[in-house]
Length: 276
Image 1 (spheres, one colour):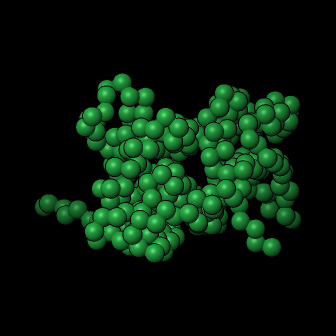
Image 2 (cartoon, helix red, strand yellow):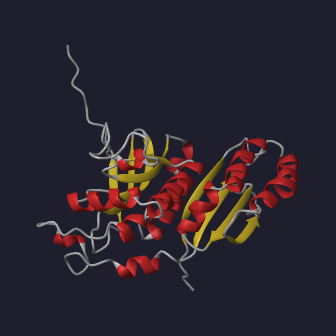
């Protein structure tokens, strides 16, 4: 007897697409494969793809986007999107940013495979951080690609048409933070010694770093803290953060994690919003 395939239940949620609908989205999906959180540029119009490729081809704007993308990769995010199998017409084979020029959509994300903590409050904390970012992480597309002027896509701007999204460009200068949540190590003393004497001084040299705090959570009664150490690094904006992670010091700092954080760590990134 042939068994019919059954649909695996899942939940998807687009986070704060905003009134302008510029194609940039934050995205959360929970299914049998675990949790997937992403942000980036989805469903662009043809004229937006054209402007995107022109910006990537530009020596200044294109290099800036490449640095942002490498910064995301450096912290473990995957860079995905719909891409051409070959290359856009007129683009040479040896173009330094050929991979980016192939993209018709572009987003950065991370998947967590099914684990026990997915059924705890930790899931809420991770997705709430994504919800609070409120602005697409790949804000490059907001300033360089702008809204669509294609007929039928006039909803892609807050006033309709091809306004330049000036307010969004101004918003990207808000402070941007990297939060690292370190799991409990097998040897806490060795972990702390390496972190304090090697890793922290190294991370403090990151270019563009504006603030760096470390917290070692304490137990609440007989309840063990969820993490051994929490580090928060603050930068002027997302571009400064991406450039720092793509720098030589950034790569050295990331590589150093293998020397002491064998128990693993969770990284969360996003802009800072003052609540009170």
